[in-house]
Each structure stands twice: as C-alpha cells, then as structure tokens.
Length: 162
Image 1 (cartoon, rainbow, N blue to C red):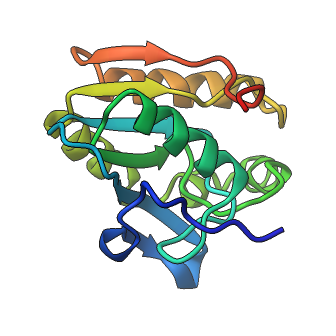
Image 2: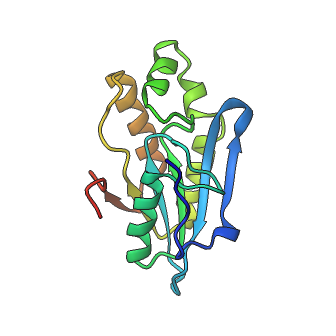
C-alpha cells in the first residue's frame, strides 16, 4: 500500500540521510505546518518504507501525533538503520553477527547530534518482535545512554490511534 504525506507536512522540505546502497536510512527529517519552534526526535525500531517522497503507515501515525502536539519539526530515527518492512531482516543480520550493519555506521553519531538540538525525545521502539533478546536489550541501553538528560517520553503503542 502506498502512503502520501498529509497536508500538514511540508513535503518539499523533507530531508533524508541514508546509505541506500547498504539499505540504510539514518534520519528522516519532516517539517510540519505548525507555528511553534518545537522539535522532537522520535526513535523507533527500524525503518520500513518511508523516504522523502513517500510515507508509510507508521510514519503517518507518528506525524499525526506530533502535529497534534504542535511540533514543527520531527526527526525520525531508529535503533537500527537497516530498512526492513519485516523486522526479521534485522534478526537475520544479528544472528549472522552483522549487528553493526543493522545499526549503521553513522546511526549513533546522528542520534547524539540530533538529540542535542531537539526539545523532546519520544521513544517508540516497541517490544522485541524479532528475538535476539540480549542484543536487543543491549542496543536499547546504548541508545538510552546517548539520549540521557533529554525530556523523554515513552510511547508503548500508537497503532491503535485513528
């Protein structure tokens, strides 16, 4: 299914930082049509499909929520930068001892950089749906250390939002 960005998104100003040959999206920067100067970093598990031209269901839900909270800029990042619609793609890399490929070489540096310039951080990586429990918990601890000291909000599920 194809998703287009909604009218409250400044589509022409969306930016992406990616390493497409390696199937990685590090950052999706989405400006919203709100008058505030508030920005938020939303950290999820891994990118699915969205890029600067096309959204996906999860990104639509995140942007709708952020727009309702009057953020004017949303930075979307992930625990793992590897594009995988099915999170088993991440699990496969981890099981093959290629977790660093799943995370991406620039992910932590960008998480640190973006977290320092936003007003709030929303953690929305959900539960571990792909196994590899110890490595998943370790990754969460790594990212939690990076974002320490920020206004932090945890969203368990936005999939029920309409």
